[in-house]
Amino acid sequence: MLQRILLSALTLFTIANFASAQAAWKPAAPRDEIKPHFSFDAKGGPNATGMLTIAADKREGLHGWWEKSFPITGGKFYEFHALRSVKNVESPRRSVLARVLWRDEKGRPVRVDPPDDGPGGLPTAEPEYPLDRATIKGWMEVAGTYRAPSKATQAVVELHLRWSAGGRVDWADARLTEVSPPSPRKVRLASVHFMPRGGKTPMDNCKMYEPFIADAAKQNADLVVLGETITYVGLGKTFADVAEPIPGPSTKFFCELAKKYKIHIVVGLVERDGHLVYNVAVLIGPDGRIIGKYRKVCIPRGEVDAGIAAGKDYPVFETQFGKVGMMVCYDGFFPEVARELTKNGAEVIAWPVWGCNPLLAAARACENHVHLVSSTYTDIKSNWTLTAVYDHDGKPMARAEKWGTVIVAEVDLSRRFFWRNNLGDFRAENDRSRPLALPELSR
Image (cartoon, rainbow, N blue to C red; front, side, top):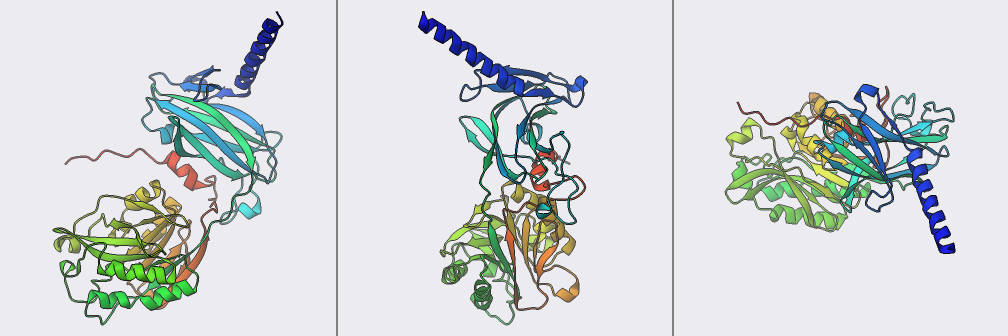
């Protein structure tokens, strides 16, 4: 009898807890006429601890979310975590998202603290957009770590489904937890403003760069970017004449320098792979090993006429300090290359570039919120491409004024960059807002 009473009490307690859990989350929508269907499964989710569901019917444009307020202390750091599973959703990164809104005790938006300001300050603390991370038990983790503005006393968490006719999302294990402040990720990025002259062989050109690599290392640079096709410049030879395999003689030389000076190197070379010749950028680590290479995707007419083949991949490489992508010269004329690298996780884009409109360098940096490091063969007086390190706002943090110099800028890859005028941390929101890719049209 006692066991039955205890079991009954436990069952009632469990049901009450689930009811309380559901009650804490409230359904919402911009307008009732586009409100999807909401439901709660107390035994749902990957751990059978409860699941919040949003399901849309076949109508277009439905949008709704579950929301819950969490008490917080301003100035503290908080980690958001949730799991989501989707069905019949064309673009989860665009239609299924979480938001964190900072509010005061009356539910009003708060201002960002001065230490967190971007250029010119930010009027209000805009929503945070946690990112998709990794799959756990078949569910996608959505997570992010944030510093609460000092005047915030609550964080309103929203779990969305939008613009997905017939789509469904299940949300589980959503929580906001106080954590220790994350460590800074300071990196020193360098670039060489130099054009090889007077060499007779590809190796002659390679050897001209050692003093600059040594200078970058002396300035405690973590990464140094060299010029485009350095084994071709000024030699009077064809691309095919100087093309070599990777690994090959030139990469062997720069691998030895990277190890000697304990620095990451990005160098532009000409690669031969069987009957094909590519314009490439190669990333070498401070251990003297090749981390990876990128084959130029956008080929200008002069290189097309010379028989240069086009690459087709946008690899991003993990290094000791962060994720690095590379592009080469003409790639910068088009937004797609830098965007694909950013979508693949690049935090820094290294750009060996013969010459380009400097506005395009600024655009590639600011539209993707990445640090871009360019090394060019154009003189500062030409008012053309800069050898520079660009910040997230597209402005040069350091730029070369004279030939034969090395520029260095220190960046913090953990620093969030805020835009004014209600954009907030646009790098995080970018992935949730950018349009669907258009199918290639045949003509």
